[in-house]
Image 1: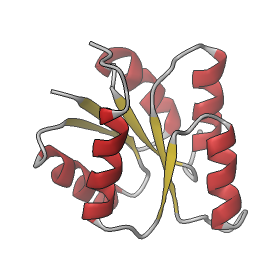
Image 2 (image 1 turned 90 degrees about the vertical axis):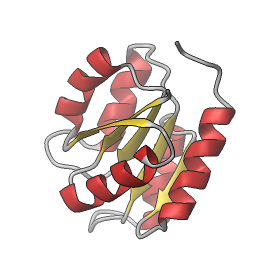
Image 3 (image 1 turned 135 degrees about the vertical axis):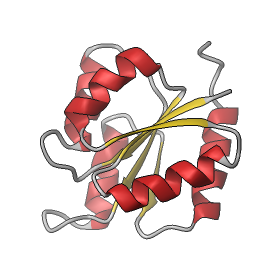
Image 4 (image 1 turned 180 degrees about the vertical axis):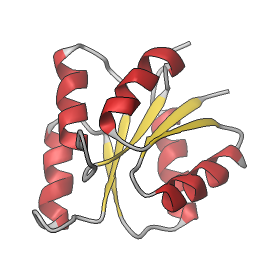
Length: 128
């Protein structure tokens, strides 16, 4: 069973994503911020990371930078509503430059999420 870690600071959205992906037979864990998420990565060893770019404590760009510096190659789907800091396009472009494989703009449908996740996992060699 493929493992997915969701780093998302909006609990309601994280749970909706978790349920949608669990219904597709993925093992899904949730983290509400980057610091907690990095700890969970070490234990959970996800096959895919779904990463909100705008989060408290440690944002998604910082998480991507940490993963890159530490040679932790985890396929990453960046998600964001943009926040107040930058435009949505800028936010997602930055995440791709930092190593995200693909991006989704909030709000997105469960179907769009499942399609992106399936495509990313199919294109990724097995990490087990």
